[in-house]
Amino acid sequence: LKITGRVITSKSPADYIPNLSTCVRSGAAVTIGVGFLMTDAMDAVASKFPDSKFAIIDVDATGLKHKPKNVQGLLFKEQEAGYLVGYAAGLWVKTHQLNGEQVVGSVGGIKIPPVDRYIAGYQFGAKKANKAVKTLNDYSQDFVAQAKCKEKALNQIANSAGVVFQVAGQCGLGVLDAAKEKKVLGIGVDADQGYLGRQVMTSALKRVDTAVFSAIQAAKTGKLKGGNVTFGAAQNG
Image (cartoon, rainbow, N blue to C red; front, side, top):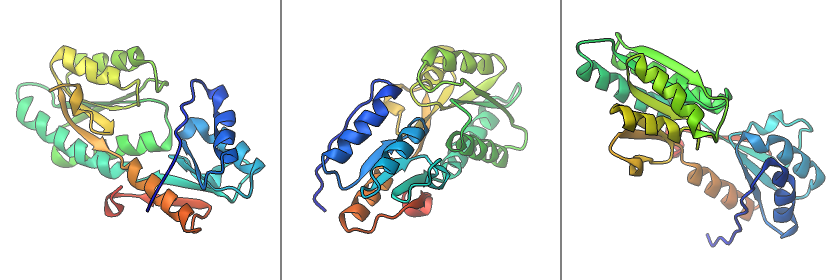
């Protein structure tokens, strides 16, 4: 499949509608939005251009306000990746926090379904691996400001968390920085964040590349439909 494309970076939410519209007017076979922050913009642009095709990552397309039929939501079973890293975290504190509380923490950005699925899987996995484990969780209410996430993680570490899981995008880099500073382990999210240092035990991967390629391929062959497609471990997601 030969693919040519264009990536436009939005500097602020005010750029979402103009940038999505630019993609459509360029003749794109499919215009793809990234993340729930683009929900309203995607709804507006897709409604304005009913003959164009769209996809949006991490958004339930059936919940868009104007119910456009030309948008496909690309969703993920984040709880599956969360479970795997949670199991690893639970085992680690079981074998390394022998003389005190066995605690794992997580810091979410904004409380939305993808974030909550990661955290639910993480906590379930940790408890499956270690019945004695205690789980802590906080939300920074932000996906950008790293200081907010770092503060939450430092508080959890002060309360004996031996592993902290970031589920907050760029903000969550502060969680991994706190882990490094306090010499505990951190867990990355979405992509492999091991390059940030040896404090990163592992990362919960979300194969956005698989989902995006699937949407592009469907658009190329005229098979992209509205509604949602969900990617889990069985779908290389």
